Image (cartoon, rainbow over the protein chains, first blue to last red):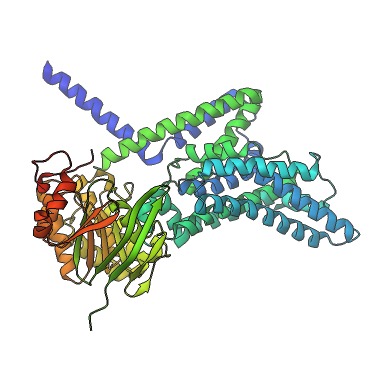
Length: 343
Length: 252
């Protein structure tokens, strides 16, 4: 009797172990994706279509970029809440410079204006990142406070410059190429995003800087004693984050065909959510780029599916919040199992 | 002509608000010399340690390493010059394997082929053979402490700064740690050990510097320090009858 029970317990135990192994290898995200796709496929007619998937991919580009940017900072055990206002300031500055130069040239210098405007936007974004970096790395302001403060400062600047109204009059080619253009049947923003996924992958996996980002978040003291300039690389993490975010902001500006100070407010939370769902530790040191990209796509996919199911955007906010918390709980559990399995 | 000291502090002082944490401390350490720094809680040991590794800068005084003024250099710059540090709190990567922990500092010094030899050499030296592919988070406490020392050694330091290297260790592990430190100094690496545990200081058989209220209170061999009436008094405070070596002043 007791022997039979023990056998049953052992069997249960081994089933649990197998389930644990599968979960530990892949994390929670593949399960989330599978469940979401099943639900949306059965609940709607238009979800499982090529057209819709292209739509999801196109919409996801902006968040994928910001999530990668956010990941770089999260790896160092930091946080960037100012990615949203980087959108605002980049959009406003790039469009103003573009419009000014375009008008001054008598609407002749199309590409000159586009390049100049984009560079001005890049400059604005990098300045925000550099200030964040100096605050965090040199003055040791907690990243949460530093980037939160920058959010209100930069948002205030963007609103002051524009008075809150959109800026129109950019060369049509800007939107035509970077917002709506396509090459080989694939939208240009998707190409750009793919390019940046590759660049970020190379940066994180193959360069010294990427390794050091992981090292900083893994253990700041150990990094310092291993001869890593913690100040310089912490600073660079915020600059790299701002640079990637800026490219996303330029693409969105092109898509909207106007400079807006009110864009990007969802990106701080959604980019952190994409990283957390993708298994990036908010305590730094661990995370895989591919999972972050999938995490961002997952969030857009869920929003898309809920739109098709005619679930209101207010209710969508509730769902995304719940998924975020569930993902983190699942990942904590995964880390625990991981340590016991390796032992 | 006397050999150039490996490390020399000249009257370094550090003040935090109204507290004079370190006051005009002058130390000299020769290559291969081992020195213990002891003192009651609040004597300025930790502050002096931070001044030496470079995480804080002194208000006054200078720190010279191999004749070079390093007073204003950052910790990572000092690490590259040859100052290896092991903190009391473990500065290791728990989520990585032992091998990967060692790789990070080793990569500065060696090419990919030499790195393998270095890892093998360090593992043997640290009693960690066979653990190279284990996650550091799953190691025993003493093994983590050795790994932390190993990460400092991986930079091929000329000076090793150790803050309570035996914190939380059992007697046998402490002895092994002591032997490791002595072996390293025998190869010409200077070492400064900040320690609370008098039994361990006795075992190291090294000259001792006693700090009290941020100043150098006494210096000499362990026997001389142990016999020093004043040192006993400042250490013992109210507990009159205790002998210093039994004062295992451990933080929980």
